[in-house]
Image 1 (tube, one colour):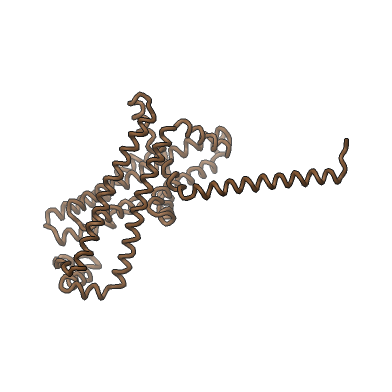
Image 2: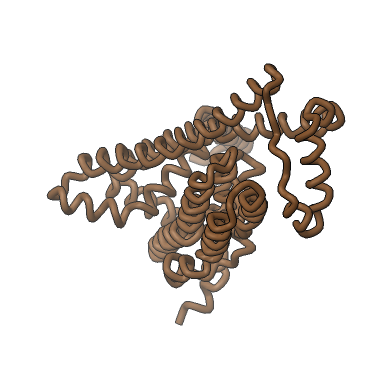
Length: 359
């Protein structure tokens, strides 16, 4: 039985309306889901990155425990949290101690600035100016502070903002470690879902290839960039702690940021060397200078060992990812940005060279 033109138009209109309603409902559901998960996006992404990067060690632990994956995930989570919280408490204690000492000294009028050594004048470029300002502060701290109120206020606001960012970053790290432990406890299911998603976006063979490429990229960058940055920060912070440099915890964080951004830690350690030479004896100051130089040069030894896994991601990509991520979401974005942009670059290059790789 043939339908009339009006009946056909009515059926077509009904189908169009039904499709539009379905699409609208899908967009509403997706939009609501995104808004709900959006505050946790970076934390979840960082948790996934940690899980992928740490999986080889986790797998060895699981095998040593007789294949009890949940127990291994629990032990990993507890160990990772202890390794994170202990240094965070030390760094936070250093910041609080320095801030409290300065605030109490300023309010009581008991804060004393020791006079500078004559060797300060030998510092390149800034020696004479630093010596003059330091001497003025040593002789009359109150007048020096009054003359530099705008700069001190701006510095204080920056310090407070940075300290707040560090605190929120530590909380995000804790949540990400817990999430990574959950992912590790369900590794097989997570891997299957990842392959399915990648296969749906491409095809079965390419989905598996992109999944393995993503895994290799995350582990390579996490070990060769973030791992080196953490090692350099720990070594540099240890040296400053031993030499009792004020605010050593804050400078340790700066070293880690510079190392992730592929900048030399000497940008922080050189002023520290100058300070140590000004207040300490010659022998320990020389030892600290040698230690600082070794810390800054250690990446040339560590990177080939940790990054040399067949990956050739340009350092410019990692630099842009680190800086852009930090500008976007703060301290945590420093790590997530570097790995995410490196991952995007590797996947894009693999997709670009797909036809050349086919026989």
